[in-house]
Length: 614
Image (cartoon, rainbow, N blue to C red):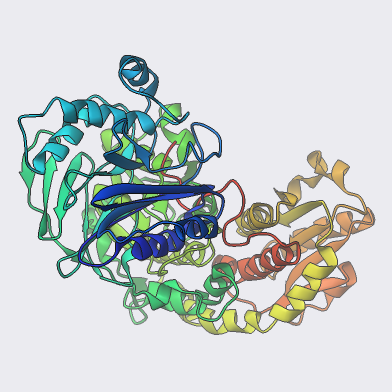
């Protein structure tokens, strides 16, 4: 979703801001803008790509040492330059960028419209006029705290969510930033500071950061920063260090972030499980669980809450928890969880699963679970994210920065962590030593088997060429491969814009068979597991309808050739681990189809990496 960048220091702000916006392109956007103070305030905005903004900036002198910038993803108001950020006050001195949604913007706008001129359709613009209104009432305050106090007072009248940065030309050595439900990170340099909606834009300059909490506000100058709550009480913040470096966030010679991140999976999978298991004891040790043996035995139900790709990883986790630990487990789409009055109690363990750790619906769901007394833990990728801070424990998946909108390596590592959690609970409750050891030995073989699949990349690209012009697709799987089918379908539709569905293959007779035709190809997962013969029978039915079939099967399964002309042969593994391998051909297929169709693979239309508003 929308991206924020801010800078104050001794260097020219313009180039740093534009470079920061480019690092945030993966979040999705449709317009961008920059504002810099150099004696006076200069603002430049453009619709479309950041290249459009960069071209316009050539006509402006942006020598100022303080500035803010923004990439907008339209919510309130269309995609126009007038709706792009930064928004500016009536006197042209105060400028602001904002992520989030102001729920009561209409009533604020109605209250201010007689004295303030509104130029946009956005909810964000009311903030700059509201802050201006309170700033003008603080004439007796003549230092930089005047801007901060105006922001504090204005925000006390706001309902909704925000991550914002404000700047005033009369206070050129001051930026004010605040957050409520939309992340803000402050990067700490040498007499310079960076502000962003995540750490990615500042990795080239510093790895030292401060994460603002909800209801906090910071006043930042070249000489330092101070943090307050909305009651104007000062708060002491700790500086943390980011694990990622700038090189990790780049494409490293690949044409797109997505394909780089697909190929990252063997390495990041090893990062996810390293030091978290004990082969000799056949178990896992995830210290972030923060539960005693007694508390673990008390758990009689697990709920996995997530959105999008994370929810398909959670569906794999359900199979693992039930099979290894014998604990009833359910998966809830986070956006629906709190609206159905879920039955949660002190014996329920809830995992909130999110790559960014900022997903608004998942955050709301975990807060509901905490209110009902559940154990709440997080499975996230981003250090210092809101979910990581608001849960009572959990685990980082160590996938490194994932910049393509379509998640790949984060999905794999989420599955890996849930397998380890299921193993840890299983060994605590009922699982044999031998079974635990066998699972861990198989997990250690996964990176090598992933690399074997990558050797098929050119073959899969040829299949993408063959199938790219179909308008519809159906993905089929059974058992633990049904979530894989869902994820494969999800990847194809989100980056290629081809209509795609996924079904459990056993449900075909209940209506879906009516869709089968020569122009409706089926992508099926038929690897060797306990449902292999049933899946084979389901594919026979599809084949009888003259439907084109593309199969994923295990190496050596010559029977697969009898069912389909196109077969992708991959290494076998234990059934519970199949999603770690079976998903990769589907990721590669979706990627190559999208590239061949000329799609913007890393930033598909209408989508954002992190959904930070409901």
